[in-house]
Image (cartoon, rainbow, N blue to C red; front, top):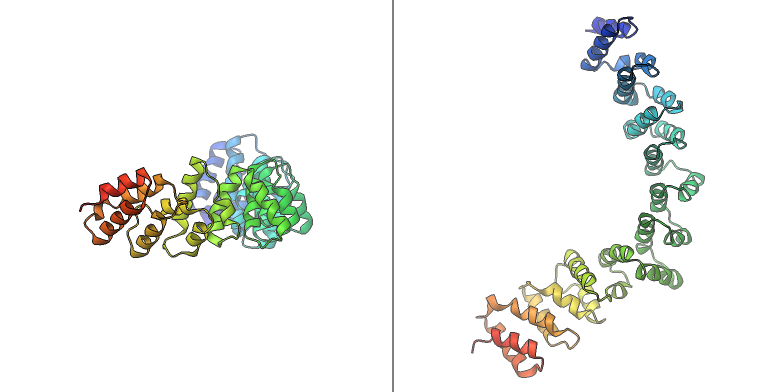
Length: 330
């Protein structure tokens, strides 16, 4: 086997193109990683098939068996070579060597190559402060977003909230929402969120997850699509009716949102909360009637009949009275 591989390596230089092609196929079929350096002669070949096979050989075998070849490839003024190196950065065992290769690619004319190089440096924590500053001011919004993701400086993140690209703004807001901010910075973040619907949609689930002190401010939006988003976010985040976040909303004019969260829930804690909201003047009549309509399948339960009777006796809202009447059987 070894002899046939050596023979195939030797034939990579054969004058007959058919012999060279056959040798290439043999080496690939044999997964002959020791042949990778021999493919360097094809990097400048006139035949695109051979050039592509050279790149493929480097991509397949160089990361583990001949990483120094990738440095040669990265130094070449060749987009295909740069793309090859960028594609295998994660496969290089030595993080320092991967960082060296990444830096060689930072000035590539291919945006995807540069993005991968930047991402490698940042994810491996190899980027210097100077490099991070460079990335933060890049013309490429993806690079700026990568840098923003690891930025922990509040003033810089607040600046990024004004970035021209939404991805960068979202990344900055995501970081700021997880930080303890002073009043001035918190108000600046709140202002940015209020004027950017994408930021608001990002902020609501994060605020729910972390029980953010400005959760109530975020939940105060009232248009139809935003209310749907609020309710779904609440359903995704909260599973129990005694969750403190529900109480926070109820106590801060968010009762109608909580009422929509309750629709379809039938556990005892939800029943208690439903009873409270049905007599809460801040919950609109449409939401109350929906809560009652979803109880029709429990119509025969004594507690439901008691609830319906109490509403018929005390409510003055025609929509609620109609729903209660449909529920009441006595």
